[in-house]
Figure 1: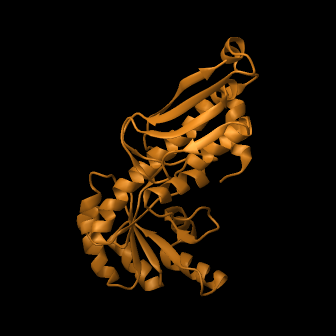
Figure 2: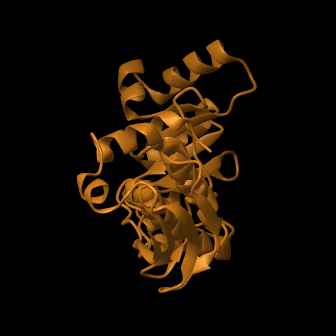
Figure 3: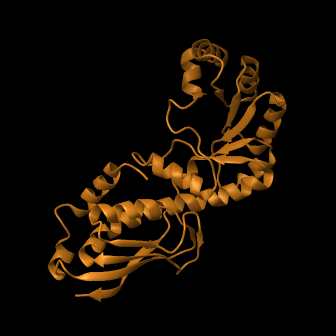
Amino acid sequence: MISDKIILLALEEDLGLGDITSDTIFPPAAQAKAVIRAKEDLVLCGLPVARQVFELVDPSVTFTPLKQEGDNVQKGEEVLTLSGPVLSILKAERTALNFMQRMSGIASASRAYAQVGAKYGVMIVDTRKTQPGMRRLDKYAVRIGGARNHRMTLADSVMIKDNHIAAAGSITKAVAKIKAAIGHTPKVEVEAETPEQVQEAVNAGADIIMFDNMTPAQVAQCKKLVNGRAIIEVSGGITLENLEAYCQAGPDVISSGALTHSVPAKDLSLKIVQYIC
């Protein structure tokens, strides 16, 4: 699923020199069965990562999913069972839950956004506003929820933003420099904040124009300026509450940092259901 390095760092952060409580109470040979349940409705995400956590702590732990990635899970439902050494289960518990809770939160938000966008034929995508070091997981969770990914890294595609425009001198100059250097195959996206910038981006030959921090009414107005000559992306201040209004304005794509940068984690818990000394 991901490099073991991220998981090992998380385990090191949580375990330190060991679990003083569990190590004191339980003998090494003690076995247990446990279950992870949803404590609220959610879109499940993170099963492969949780499996990796338990495997790295102790390959002898049996990990049995009861649900699949992307399933809608109701409060109280069991999502997986575990059996093996009680010490291993308890040492992996918090790290596995932390990954699953964040990823399920992102997947749940992405599902809600994607369902609104689907009604209007608008693609919902994420941004690079992800947890440091966790981008692959954050963006994976977005896909599990049903939304799409914007660029993963700065090397993935051209996006001329406000600071590029300011430093280059204009949208026209920035686009010209890019097109002279990279050839004809990559798409060029330009961020525009005003109708004048939208018109300049169209005239400069931008393939994608991102309407940044505009109201739905301004989006509808600027769409007329584009008139089908570029893909229209809308971004900035998009929430689930105002998403439908932006979709009705007619963009092709809506990108929202809220899918990853401030989404609340979903609540899951692990409970020991049988202890075998």
